Image (cartoon, rainbow, N blue to C red; front, top):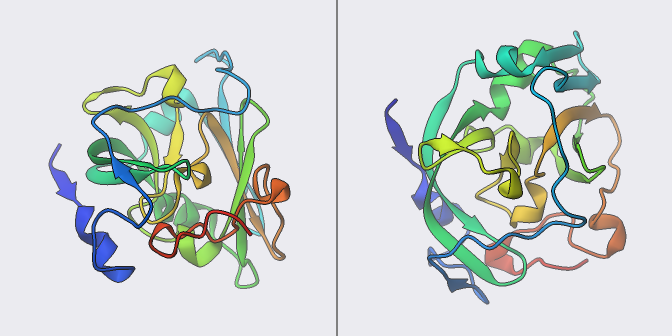
Length: 198
């Protein structure tokens, strides 16, 4: 599969590829709120619900059969590190939105995960081809401690907006706060504006 390089998206937000207050690392640290949840490929289910024409449900095999892309992205953690040139393979957010038929009054998105984590973003921040439901990292299945089988990647936001172990997305007509957002983290999470906390 051809890899699309989207590492220049920073030009929309700032002059430097490395956002202010970040340090580049070759490592890929593991951070989560409560450890790595278990999952079973036979019972795993991904759902699309809320303000849509058709609510959707996918098994693991069905999700893997959706159209996918491979992108080279940068990854920015709110704790101050950035990892450049990550290759993620997965399903672009707009692919799922189009299949579900998002209502005109939908304005917000809530992501849910196997560990009961949630995170929210305005719909317009999600409807980008760079927002992926990723199941491969650097050509290999996404490691479970990094969110495998499936995580969201949001290269234009701090990475807490990219739910690990994601298992659902809900389209909302009013904004709601996710797990860290309820605990004082920024709802917008723009790394180039250092929007770490609200």
